Image (cartoon, rainbow, N blue to C red; front, side, top):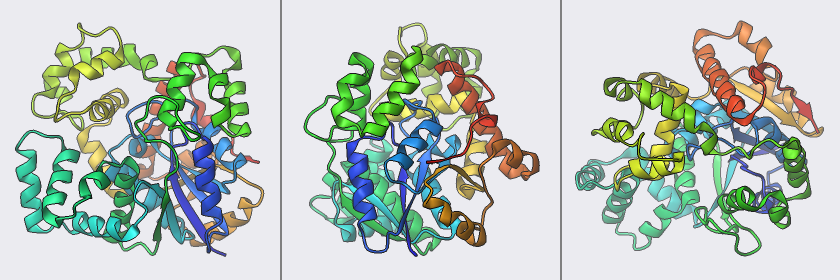
Length: 405
């Protein structure tokens, strides 16, 4: 019995995701597929279109065997810490043999070579990276330029620009740095470009699907979603709730920025080099949160980084707090949903896992250690903020029910 892992967001689960899942299940040594899925806040610094329990349901109904939660403190972090959290969670379960990810460049040898450089950070490479950063470009761009010069690979720029390649490299780097006995497997990504904002072709990006839903409604994307996903979306939004998006957090974000001093703002990840002043100055110039993010963005601080920084501030995740949590990785594994077949894996995980596994937040919280409670408390806060913005009941963490499909 061998198990493949997928680190995912499924925001929402679309036909490209189903294809990835089906190809993963078709690989030799993929008797089961386990997903480590982002919580309510995502790596782009945005709230998910569907709450985590609904996205977990979509994953299982579309073929996943088990879906575990990546807590928000990890799931809304940079690619490095997000990837590490997903890989560490898989490794600590003790049953995952491989991690399968979609990639714009499925040549695993090249990705591994780049990951090895980033994992080891030779002095010559580190010097180049500092040189590129000093020119004022963003960290991802500086790293791209440094890798291109260090490796002399002609296509390294194209590779590093691919969002799935970036995550794939980070997955491999996490495996290398921590010595995890997990095999990374890259398969060709078939969906349109991750940043594509309009629907084109048979497999549009999740970004394009979300944008179309916001503008035209769920019916407009029915051809690009598996029936189960469409049914879940239609059912969740049948009561007239607004589509969950970052603008629902505008008032909360603006209040937080307005209420904190510049010195206090500097305590949060990403707030450096005077960004606190840009955050303050932009408050009375923007009508929407999207406009505000654009106003605060620069060549060095792109939109996604600003969005993540705003989520850290909103969720009160300071740099000191985040660093301590990110370095240790997940300390528990919360199972959100399972297939009937996947339940066969649960006793195997319970025997092999190096971290506790649970399905009930309330029951686990009562006996959790202090470090675990720190993550659990942040998850409860993020869940309450998400739920309030989305028009859902607060204290949702205590009412989410583990389900078998």
